[in-house]
Image 1 (cartoon, helix red, strand yellow):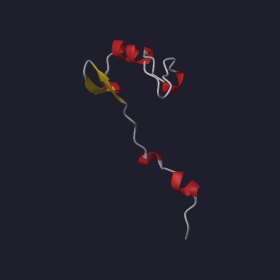
Image 2 (cartoon, one colour):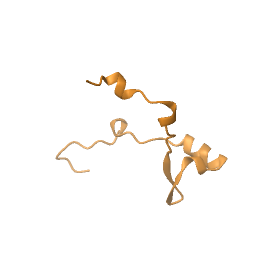
Image 3 (tube, one colour):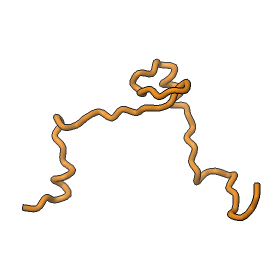
Image 4 (cartoon, one colour):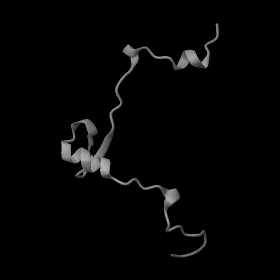
Length: 64
């Protein structure tokens, strides 16, 4: 008996678990679910660093 990809990906609702996002706030890590209203707003306003969008690329072999 072989298992198809679709059978592997199916989960019953009883098997599902919530995912908890942890992030660093005020020097220590805390779960997002424990943030107060202001901290959640601050977290949602954060800008994420994307290396591909960085305008300060240095070519290999060149000093800054």
